[in-house]
Image (cartoon, one colour):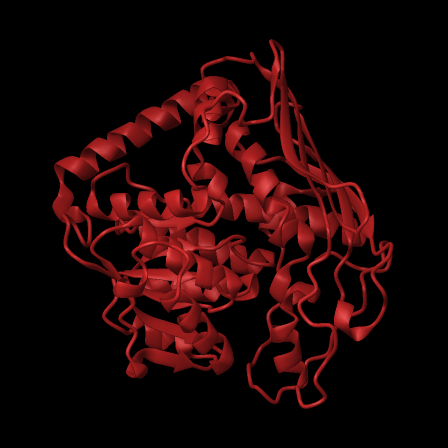
Length: 424
């Protein structure tokens, strides 16, 4: 079996994958009773994580679909939830306000709020907390047999991402829909270009590139002296590795996921470098890098050259992908026509999958693998070591706190120094 697998080309792999997907689609349409929420019955949604991305996701879900409602919300901060609910009710998107049915008994606050949302009468859950919580919430959603929209990334450490992978397989067995916030997978230009690349438009892929060269995400300019470590790190979550994952995981995943998707496989190894060039060594900036370069190698020898950074303005910016083939090249969207807002389109695809009106979707394993790619590159940059896929898939690294309390002291590990930082 192993030697046979080595001789499968990427094109035949993608063709077979497409055929299987088509088979799954047909199966789901023929057997709609296997789809929870089949037909056009009302779908009730709950939101877990009421920050900016969660607030947007809820509006996009409600705007893009008929016969849906938002009925429950949960967050660890009451001010986040109430601000989010007010914004959703006054949405810039048409048709949203009348679909908001969140009564006072379904405003859930606390570290266990996610359990209360999942225990509510909902069909779909929108997971939009900071990514450190994604594995715990994803697993709980599958156990509760809810359809899932999960923001990317799918975790910040190997232990958590492996939990998502296992849960994603169970979700598929249960025919639960899983749509990720890697919205390029539902963006028409990317989808049509992917199809043409799969059909040989640029020949065999020989090199790939991904960039997220942007500006910093700083959520707090200073720390309120009343905030405990736990509260502060949640309100400034983008600055801390355990809850954010670093830029390469939280943000650059978009570009890395595109290359993973077009390649149809994960890499076998990576080496990376990075550091904090401008980011000051003060509390508000936490312990993440402000730039990482990575060189991934796939099993067939193709490389992905990846670069991400967050420097202050005025600096050069570039958010893009590039794939070079033996017959041409593509930026992964130039062979397709511009479509609708992909942030809305992903929620349309979610509901169509649930109702059996479109292909069955389970992005769980694919985006979990993309997340693991980002984590392995981060760990390579932190440690200065080359890291293989097998190493990251067997790593016991678990960044999550062992307890959660609003008054908790939570020490911040120092900024990683290659040669001193130890990959486990």
